[in-house]
Amino acid sequence: MKLRLFLILMLILMPTTAFCISIGESAPDFILRDIDGKEVSLKDYKGKVIFVNFWATWCSPCKKEFPELNKFYETYKDNDLVVLAVNSDLKKGSVEDFLTRYPAKMTVLLDPGAKVVGSYGPRAMPTSYIIDRKGVVRFIHFGFDEKNDPMKWVKEVKELLKEIR
Image 1: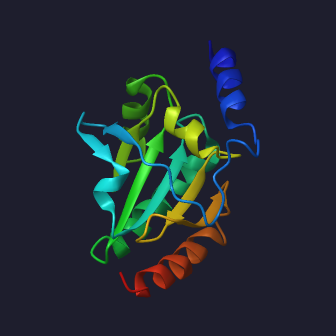
Image 2 (image 1 turned 45 degrees about the vertical axis):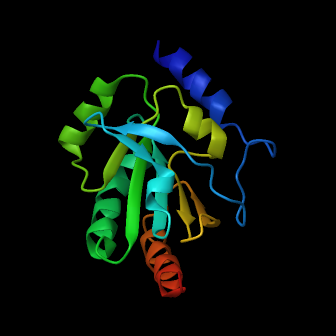
């Protein structure tokens, strides 16, 4: 079963120019449910800087990244930054178990059919898209570099937060 899930996710995540969102493109809108079942839409946050992070419970770098995402979110949550952590696991129980070990302060969204993952086309797990106030993808981070990514997030988000609405 795990092998089948892995193969399905690999097919979804394989890099193709037809499915990869690039810097400068409008971020595809989506509606997903959060961990508590509430519907959340990307367009609900228009006018804010949005950090969309795609992750999975089986992803080792995601486990290292989660505490850094929490710190990042806590630092900038009152400054018009939204962090949406989009999970692609098939079972909500796996996500709940993960969140017991690695609690999330940011909004966790469920994408069990990987439709949103497919519309963005990340080439790795985790992948983060930083979206400006106008809904344009301005920065993309594939994977997680624990020494450099958190500093890059801060620099990039500060830049976008300074831009006039």
